[in-house]
Image (cartoon, rainbow, N blue to C red; front, top):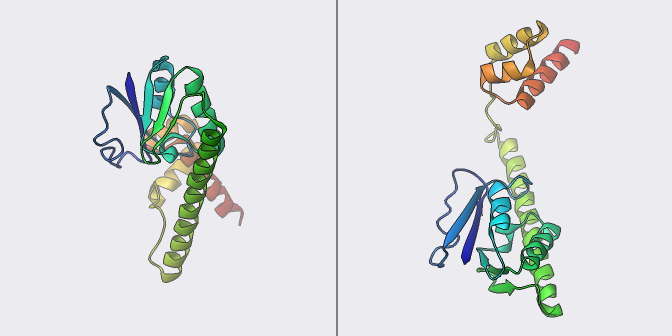
Length: 188
């Protein structure tokens, strides 16, 4: 069976281009950042594939978070008797690969990891320049000042953080962040 794996970093991104024109019988799609360890469809795909299957992935960076993750995933899949093909790089791995194929996997994976690091560096530099110009203000606050004050008051009254998160439509981590900001403002 020919199985496709697609990963996009955000829910808004389009999955169409990744295996466009590639014949697959089943596709698993994750909408999660590459740095995220929780990729449920990847886990589901690994459990699904059997000996003799082929997993097709647009490129190495779509499968793995970094070089170690790439090698581990390819080893896991080929250990099950599954062929792994990377369309963009025109590389295939079967587990019976030559030392040259193993080297190519490592080198190409290292380039993908390096490219990701460069993109993040350029992104940070761009944000810094935009901040200097006053164009980039960051993410909009999850709560208005009135809501943040109410959150703080309700937390001080002993209301559970998980209940507050549900009531305000935010994560518990965001509740704790607002409470840290509020307590820091009070102590200074």
